[in-house]
Image (cartoon, rainbow, N blue to C red; front, side, top):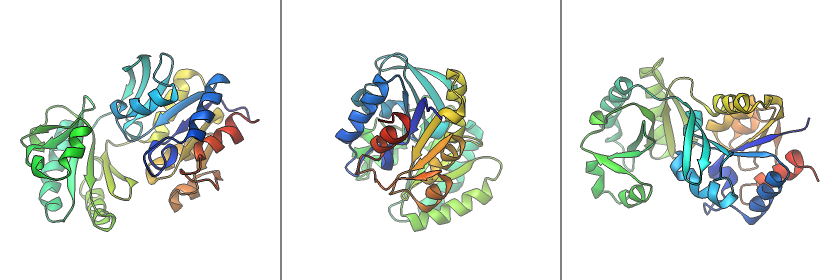
Length: 278
């Protein structure tokens, strides 16, 4: 198979444990672009926060594409910093408000646990009460704006995030799966991040839409990932690749398990081994 496009997760896959793109990954992406291949960032992040990495990799230019919000937003770059949404799926405001009203008092009972959300503009939303938290400086750097109460947020939601200790989040996940069955879905994007997403949204749907839009067969698509929220795209792509630091479920879903971790140019290894064979 001649592969035409590689879709890569960002955190834990493309980025090392310092949150950086390694030089080896940068060189490999440049080689792939020079060979006429498509490189697509496919993340739970917003398109706003992906731009810095796209810019570093030469992807923030017309004719390049990206997938954000775990497949909830597929976009095209029309000019540096300007994106055009090709596909968007959000959680209805009525469901989001019900979730907020139900889980806020539960989350308040756990230490070091808090909620943030992303509205229909892709903007990070936090409650005004969080401005006194140590974490708020980090949220502000990510572009957060505040509202008096989450239940007052206008518009629909791309996702609701619950940050906390993994063991505590597992309890929240079990509760939300039962309480909101048929209204939303839950998945982990990291051990400390539980995501509540619109029904049917996942990275597999995102890469399927983009491949069809570009006229690329799914059999010619490579997906690279490390976490539970990558499983759908690892299964949907023609070749699913798990990096060495991937969680067991992601490794089980992949066709190939690399011996290189995200600290060892894993995406670069995937590019040179499968996308642009030397």
